[in-house]
Image (cartoon, rainbow, N blue to C red; front, side, top):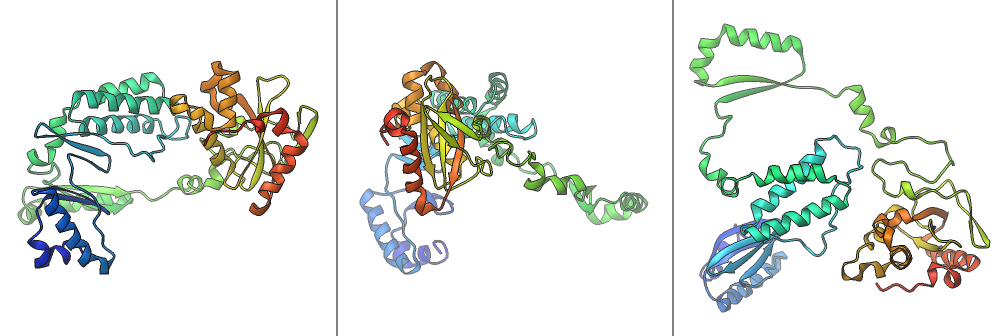
Amino acid sequence: MLDKRLLQDPSITRLDRMMSRKRFLDDLWFIWRSTERAFENFKTALNNMGIQSCFTLKGEVGTTVEFLDVKMELIGGRAETSLFIKPTDSEQYLNRRSDHSTHVFSGIPYSQFRRAITICSREDDRAAAINYIYEKFANSGYRAEELDKCKDRALQLDREEILNQHRTVSRRKDDGILTFVINHDPGMVRTLKEFLRANEQVISQLIGDKRIVISERRGPNTASMLFAKSAFSQLVSPRGTDQRCRTGGCLTCGTMNLDRQSRVRDTTIKLDFSLNCKSDNCIYIAICKHCVPCEFYVGQTINPLHIRLNNHRACFKLSNFKYEQSALSLHVFEKHVETFQDKLNNFNLGVITSTSPKDLNRKEDFYIYISKADSISLNRIKVIS
């Protein structure tokens, strides 16, 4: 609509001073070749016409702009670019313990290092971006030696060569290739090759100096069809023996170590072993592994438990006093700071019960009351959110 209708209108065209316009979905970037007042007039005219079609242009002209993952600045009449990370970025990459092929765990870090090298125009910004990405992968369980290898490989890249690839390559490497794609059939491949050899001169007159390649599309085998289904790819445990979901890569499973009847101070808490770390609308308990007598915390979540615990896990950070936003991270910081990096592995966790969303508060209050968690244990801590 922007190109075909709005920008074709004479009242908009006379105000348009955009140059090198780029768009990704609803994000628009361009160079404005006039004054800020002229831009405001252009934006007002464009919005007045586009409002009937639910089109609105927002933004401003400045010397700094963020577009997708690129931050661009005008410094001394020169455009400099650096890596831009949105405040809402989860700062998480594929966990190293995830059940993926080995090449995936080298390909992802390398691609991210390559992205930093491509985007950052200044050496100091490039080094800072690479160190930031390196730290985030290390936090996700990647080993230093494999990250160093990916980093060294990326640092050998020539940024100018990457940026100018589309300009310097006039022809694609496969321009001289004609590809036939067929379903996997050994008999058909032999027949095609015999036909091509027998009619080589005629084919050459028709298509010129091109090489013909036969590519086979293999059909799915039984194993790939079967194990693509998550129900078959998960490990099966005897029903009711623990509260682990046993989904590949689940960080919570390793902490679900409580017995069916767990003792906290003078109270026995019975856990529902039909539930696991993927259960939602539930009441959970976390018991510190180190404290004697035990310190524990009773909480509720309307989301699946592993999602709620990911929020607790994200609070195990020293920057900006993030640890004060969770009773669990605050307890570990104050009492067991030497194991702070172990995060939720400082606790044994379990699911007490599940209920309807409207009854969650009542159930949580009940278990806090009978266990006295708000007077003798971690529920007495008031966190800063």
